[in-house]
Length: 178
Image 1 (spheres, rainbow, N blue to C red):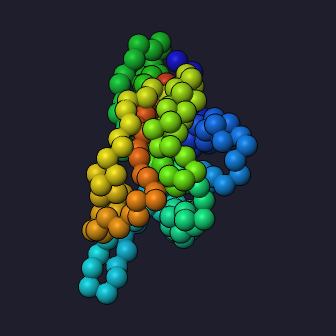
Image 2: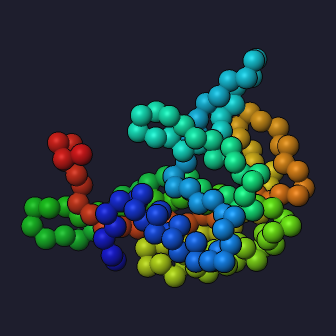
Image 3: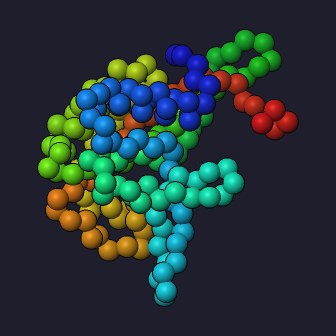
């Protein structure tokens, strides 16, 4: 298994691989890791997916989505560790990050099923990526991304989620080396 220096670096590599699927199309937005951010409107609370910068500033991933044919971002769902055989006093672990790639697009530009197959074919060739499934249930994906918001997505658009796992081998970092 190949060492992966950071999940963010690997997500950038995944995005580079996906960008080759769209090599002739400039109307695609690829984001990195998004988080759920709490928002409050009058009397209601909800959460929205956003890119959060180190200074705490947030960028709503769908802020410009209607202007793009496809918008893609990633979500970390969980991380697991499993100790593997190592030598000496250093412990080695496999770290498995379960992620989701959320794909929002215009039906007039792409067939969602063919697009999902093309993306899966591209990232499935990366040695650190293991594909686990594609969720085409628009209502289910929307509800998990927009907690507290009724689904308002126009039928001109699709929303799907590609689930995948990133695996890396590394030793645990000491707190003073972060």
